[in-house]
Length: 451
Image (cartoon, rainbow, N blue to C red; front, side, top):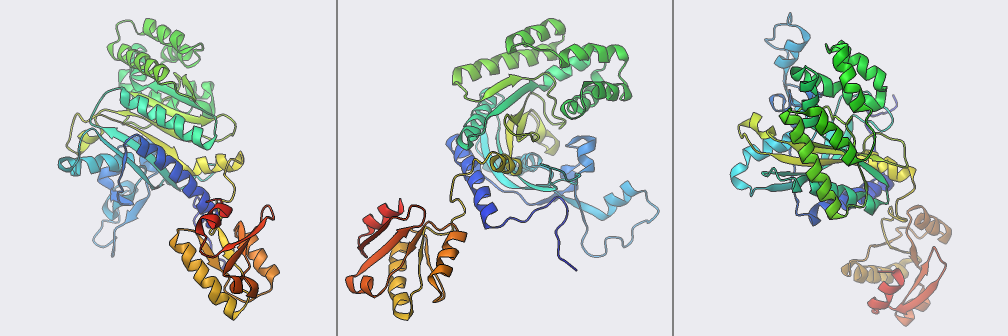
């Protein structure tokens, strides 16, 4: 039987890993620049930690882990599937990094300095239907700041988004909204208790269109009049100031809606002062279906490549409250590394020679030449230069092919003449340039290698 891997997962060879590490390293460098420190949490969490944090649809996408041993022993087999699942599965694979982070903060609150700023780059799992740009196992690159409700936290997320994608050379649009606006809309249309139903439906507008969203809102119990009231908001056009003034007039005495407008006004003022490079747009149809968001919400789309959201996040005011630490406000952003990978590949934006495992290959010219090359390679290793010696005394064409296929840009062929003169001979396989240097002239060797 031919071996295979589960649908929605992928293997990554050396070239893919070099590209993934380029993504991770670029994002890490920006996180660190803004004072974020790295943590990690286990792949598996107790289901009690995960359940109820992602909405009804999110709960359905949790991968559950069967209890170890005979999980079905002493279990009532007549239970319905939901009750049976609760009996035989106590743990699950994490769905995102934010809820485990909240659990981490509560468990370690006495060890942390607040506001606590952390980043985390680890895989997450979702039992979703695999399709282009959507995987069952994928990495997230998260940064969160918790312990302050200042809108400077939201600004910092916008700044990091702008810097990361500018570093990659990807043109993006950062869409912004505020969940308080959505709460306000649910109140003024007469359904304050259906805010979750409204956001879950609105969150699908890009995928299924306005008419289908309106049909779903009706199915979820909203009246035709309420749906008609929401329609102009979802279709509202114009600049940010016009949209906010329109919403302010619509909300009238709705306190939560007006609070959302005020927060957005302040955030966009901060964005203007900070001189953000990327395009930032107020999108009143942006909902983000995760239930824990309470304030600003973000979503990032690539402008030159067709794929779903490549980054998203928002403000959450009481995520730690469910774990016994109320009133701890936080804001976070999550970069979808796998989708960013696809965008960089599709737009051909990866730097050249990322996959090169070594800078220099020493050709194997025979027994004595190998011993000479070993001393050279050892000296270069001590200088931090990545180099390797071809293991077999094979034809030079085979050794050249090896260097080419491994994207090694330089080759050294040291024979009897170089050994007698105490030199190292090197060739640039890209330009064809060749030079020889005394074997202890490390500075010249580095310069030739471009180091």
